[in-house]
Image 1: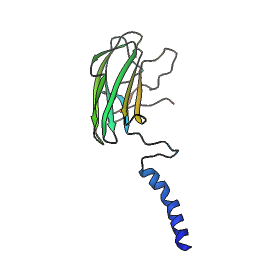
Image 2 (image 1 turned 90 degrees about the horizontal axis):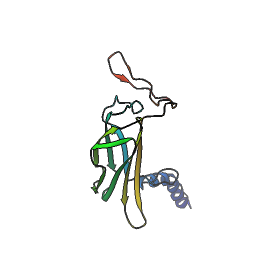
Image 3 (image 1 turned 120 degrees about the horizontal axis):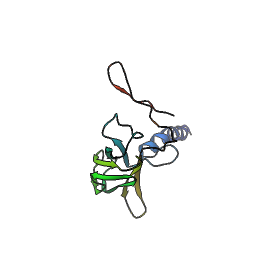
Image 4 (image 1 turned 90 degrees about the vertical axis):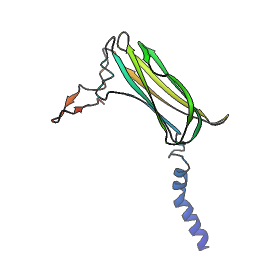
Amino acid sequence: MKRIVIVIITAILLAPLCIYASGSRPGGKPASLLSLKISTADESFLPDNVSDGDVVDLEVTLVSHAELERVDVSVRLSGHIELLQGEIDWSGPLKAGEEIVFPVSLRVLKNGRGKIKARALSQLSKTASFSASHTFNLGRDKEEKPSHLPVKKDSKGRNIIEQRL
């Protein structure tokens, strides 16, 4: 009887560890095999303050958290922006922990507004796939408050970027 009680208590205590190790997160959602983000190449760039004709350099970063035979990446542009340079479609295999950065240069056309959406998809089987996506907005409406406050400098000359909540 003591052994059965010890086995049950051990199983109860180890269950969360086994679930986490299997790649699941709390709430029953599986951990993503891919992560994707779009960021500016220049950290001091403020996406809300773009003007007609501005050239914006972005980096689309894809990270694989497992070995995947095929990953399809697409970057879609909408609004008043045009692609100057860079790949917006890519397919290929990825190793676990591998990171790929796609540099993209864009020109803001009019009204200083646009949206860049990146999506990565890996089809594991006919019924299982993993995807990741990220959207990056350029510009804002005149009535809209900027998400970033003006850049300030600290006593050593480094940029201080504040966020409006």
